[in-house]
Image 1 (cartoon, rainbow, N blue to C red):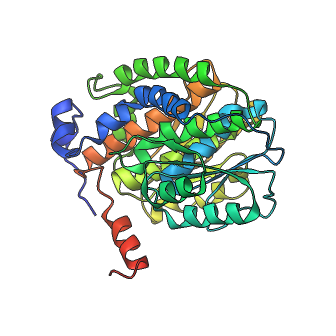
Image 2 (cartoon, rainbow, N blue to C red):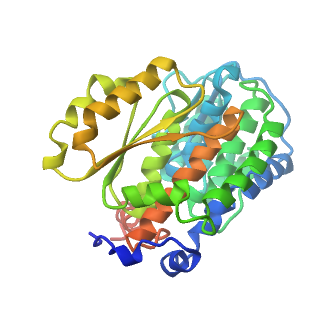
Length: 358
């Protein structure tokens, strides 16, 4: 476990960040606005023609490749006209039929669970689309005449979140599960450029992202979301895992008020835990009340409780604002811990062991 940094190392200026962030993960995070625009172009380059899928859309993927389906569903909200589900497994949901579209999402193109879903969808006769940077998935899809949406290479899969989210939104539109969102994506990209300035490496030391990172860097983050922010809470959890290399947990309101809130009773005897609540302008008033009461009830057991508000006018803007903030906070926590955010050595070892190479 990394030692807690001393007070002298708590600056988050560009030089300090660069000294720890050896592979410049920060540049990939700050590039989110341009990634959104490039993702739209890449979907257009695939020359997909609309089709009808009464059975809705399944986004099959794992990790950073799967999150796009969940974020797209949150962005669409009540505008989704058919079921949209992110499936993280070796197989498809039992209700999948030949009238369902299956978007197989694997950044590397080699994710074994996604490849299994690709084959299962083919056996079922479902419409398939692949989104990937290459690998076996691209090879299989092209051999089968399955459309491939290309993704820019050179990223860690978790940094390709814009490409996977836009692909899910656009495939939802093409198969009749959601409306066109291109204009909203363009506006959100402009909005995110402003937030990169406000929260990025050049921002003030008391910016929201840097302040929150300092408050969290010596605690285990426990993130809560509700409705639109629930999948973003999961994104925050996984970004703390992979960027900062720390345990992190998430739960969903109002469910956590029926169980997890009790678990905070003896939290201080087990370690240092911090609670983060992701809030939104469209959050149900009773959920907002639950957040306020829960903060009060667990306050003595937490190293801190924090409410983080989404920013923006549209659902796309608000979702992506919290995605950007969580990515930056997790990277800043990594820097404060002296941990390079990019490598994920244990994942490499796990895959080698599964492949029989270790």
